[in-house]
Amino acid sequence: MGRWEPNARGRLEQAAMELYTERGFEQTTVAEIAKRAGLTERTFFRHFADKREVLFWGSRTLQQHFVDAVAGAPDSAAPIDAIAGAIEAGAALLQERRDYARQRHAIIAANAELRERELIKLSWLSAALADALRRRGVTEPAADLAAEAGIAVFRIAFERWISTSAQSDFPQLIRESLEELKAVTAGR
Amino acid sequence: MGRWEPNARGRLEQAAMELYTERGFEQTTVAEIAKRAGLTERTFFRHFADKREVLFWGSRTLQQHFVDAVAGAPDSAAPIDAIAGAIEAGAALLQERRDYARQRHAIIAANAELRERELIKLSWLSAALADALRRRGVTEPAADLAAEAGIAVFRIAFERWISTSAQSDFPQLIRESLEELKAVTAGR
Image 1: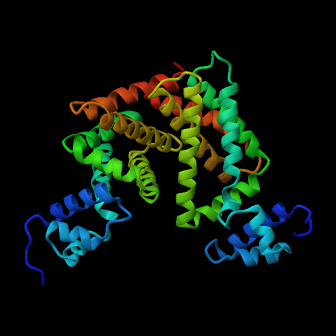
Image 2: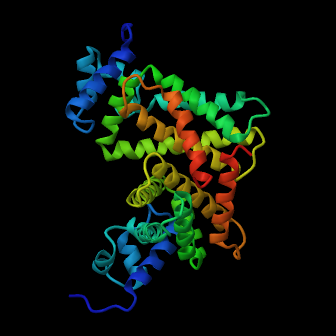
Image 3: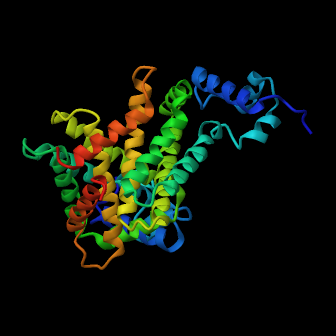
């Protein structure tokens, strides 16, 4: 049994992000992450399945936020409004972690395997949103289309959020991007 | 020098699709594909970089159709109409190959690596559509949003096309799905 280590998970995450940024994801080993965090490899593996999971564990939390928000939308909400509420709630969750989000985005952009993983996670988020809509009685193809539109808006607003000033408001960018999507699909 | 083999590429593709369907993509070797086609491995590698490329070489052609159609849309066309024309042109290209498209879809659905590859190819198609819109002077985020909307419509109409009756009209399903997307984003 390892002794209790205060905030081991947070220390491991920070050490991993530093190393991925300094020398690249591929070139970093779990041993190095544990060493930088002042912990053992065994402790690392109690918190993360592998070094990739350090970057992707948060998507489960995001997915749960999305799904809960869709389920909790008023009965009268149109599918796109339920989705808008969900992706705004997801954006609010991330708002305080912009530095982390920027750093993570740069790490992922630099590695093909990670870019692929991110695409897969986004497709799962879309599938989860569509499932949540179907549980509200939304039929196909409306459920799939609304979910895909929501993920597209989320992704595009995210890229604007991390590339513009530090004061930018991610939920506000979600609302603006959704308005832009409405204008685009209306043929304007 | 290998001797000239009539329709070697088509024979290799057919043999590969049969084997992927019968025993799975993972379990099929290039040697087996070549043997079933009555050709050599060397001939296989003159036509395809690897056994995965048999399933994905067509996406380059599809991408070229998409990009040419966006470039060729009337100057007055709104971004979403340029995209609609492009994905309808892509659907028309595939219309005569429904049996192939169904078989390919089933092979990909059965293998995680192939599903990931398909997601990546779709993201490249979306990026190519967005680029083509930018070359028409469409600004961000409208170019990205219209391209993502187009790929979502294409993917969803594709799944309806291969899962409904053999007589179904893929370009018509594209038009219907786009109308559904317009209704969804309008909050109906």
